[in-house]
Length: 220
Image 1: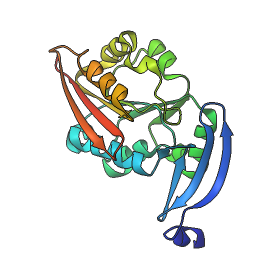
Image 2: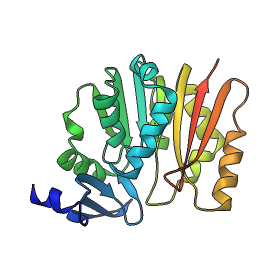
Image 3: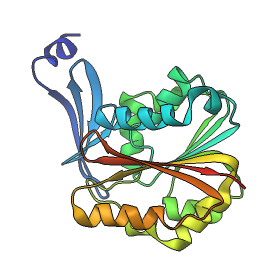
């Protein structure tokens, strides 16, 4: 494909769409790969996929293969689902929650999100979904952004407690955060301190410059 080859020289935009939640969405060939970007940041299949892949490696691919159910809050183009299915070979159930219907449309059209077995994509607000679901999960991946902004509810006690309730013992939370300045670093320190001795919390700073990853294991 000519566009793919040319993308090694410069990015080639093939689709652009306005979105209520994400403002501007772009599908672009970049260094031979299709990526999904918002106005100011990568949403899928670029630096974001590298960030989440590192987090999954910290947890351990073999451990993840033995999980039964995974919840992904913030699907975007579905890059973490691709990693789980194609690289880790995860065979259990994956539930993906994405608030932006426009993002889901692009993910299915350009990134094959609708082609996986045992994957359910739910068009819903993550906060509302975790209140309603009766399922429990072995891994909960939280990757929720509106461009470069993270919703405040992600760091509030009620949401944290609900996520912890939905997590099985010996399960993991993988939480991707964006850190652009002192306030964000302080916010992440406060977040880490919300977990008691029933959890093992690790913070991995400066992943792809502006990302910090949390891995949180539920011990009991």
